[in-house]
Image (cartoon, rainbow, N blue to C red; front, top):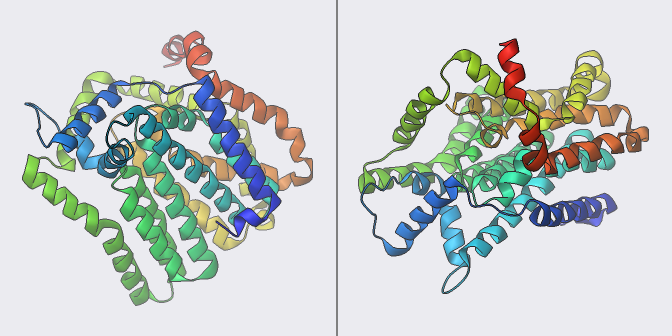
Length: 372
């Protein structure tokens, strides 16, 4: 990171990240959601050691270090809400900056990396959920870090970067389970890098797996013995709850259309363009290893479709892959990158206005009922 900050474009990226985040806190402002209240209850249990009747420890199971970080920052008479904002601010910065590094490492063009980072930094799911009193951005940050270190491992063939990725997964799992997705990308990279040495691939995957999963699995065992509750309990509860929410496959399809439409809005035009260049000119724009990395990032995001509920927040891990593909348009037209400024501005403004205007006044449900 220190070396990255020596170049002008990295400072532009840092300035953009900070400017976007400041505007998010002013325009959107943090919200207390229904999830916030469950985190509050879990933090009270962690602080006092007393669990009320009917307490469900799912938040302790999935976001233990996030809640402990807030309690640490708010130690004494500190403001827990302010501590929450501080923690999420750090994770927002890390998410965006490491994504800038991914684009730069992948395409080697600093202005393209800045543009790609801007697409992520102003994405609706990120700015809304990083500013709310929820924990998701912590898992996203470590997922992005794991993707970055996996790419570095692929580019340098230095397994130390693979271990850094595993550490990111191992720590991130205590903040939110999105971090687990990073291990999928890492495992794919290891298999690709060691495709001519299967024994070495198995050893590296096993070592990375121990670093990634041993701490969290021991923690899960401890939680089970204390509360008789596991991640399977949490998933089963979510699965049963979703049955009453999505009454038919048509409703589920409609929810996917709404979710993904609002998840990337005008950015989908860039994605389609990037997909076109990926199919027609991939050899001119990408090395083979970079092409494989794109595949691995896409594979790593697929488990989001296994979760019973469909929301922008839960689907966010798809976005890094989508933006990386979109950036192929910027690579193709690098010298005319400023021409895309109006589209980027419209994209950002739409995301800022999503809650108050777009979702409120655009009746997608009625249209989908006619179609489906």
